[in-house]
Amino acid sequence: ALENGLLLARGDEQGDVVLHVSEKTAVVDAVTGESRSLEDVKESDTIYAWASPAMTRSLPPIANAAVVLCNIPADFGVPIYAEVQQVLPGEDGKVSVLMTGDIILHMSEETELLQGPGFTCGNTFLSDIRPGTRLLSWYSMVMESYPSQAVPSKVLVFPSAYTVSYTH
Image (spheres, rainbow, N blue to C red):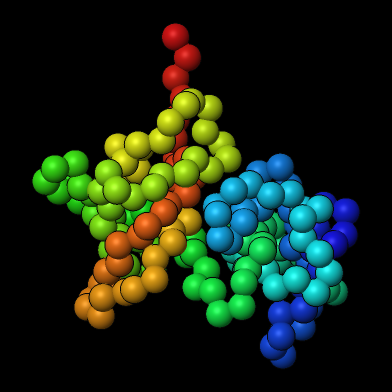
């Protein structure tokens, strides 16, 4: 770990990269979805990270991290981070959402909703999920269709980058 960042060995021919971690970066336990800090990431840990595609031209290149997953057990299906493209309301309060990456997530009151960083209010509801909202979703089985479909057991909800707050 570096100050405000992580040096990653990517395990491919592209070489190392530095991930810049700021107060906006969500460092998340891959199993529980609980918030962690950069100090919880140890040298030689396996992590998953979603970062901005823009990188500096330095060597190694530096990219800004949006989400860093740590505490990943061996053979564990890590949750997937993606943005909501379209919301399809269903019956009985159920909601289906089309995500980037062409997967539809089917959610209901049985889906455990966790609140990601950036929210300023109390609880998170299915109605808070709208286009632009980003989700970190735990699911084990994907139905082979186009688009693919899954039923997540747990979803960490990040507020939309497009949310506008009004002051009265």
